[in-house]
Image: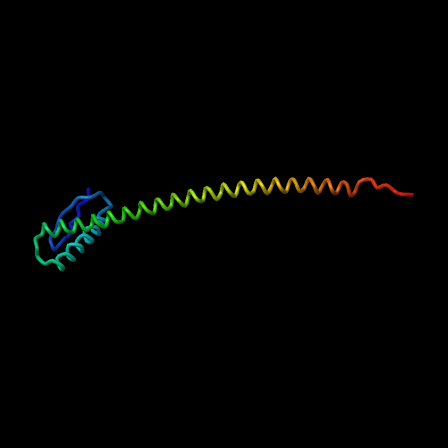
Length: 124
């Protein structure tokens, strides 16, 4: 386990993390520190615990909103995939009708051509 020291609200906290995750943890702590700093600017010194809880709730609110957006996007992707599948099925049916119609027309043309080039009777 790696060890990282992060600073939140001017206080250093030593934390453990997986090897290679040090920069990620430091970045997360810096983002959380911004929430804490924002709240301190808005409300002043109302106590470290209260500020930390408020910052945590703000983060959870953002996470909740992002989760809702992801769920909506997943539903939209599912709807688009379903519409695409329907369109592909329609295309396949249209191709089958086209092939059948062309085949029928080819048969008619062949029959007509045979009649036109068939034995001619002379009137002499």
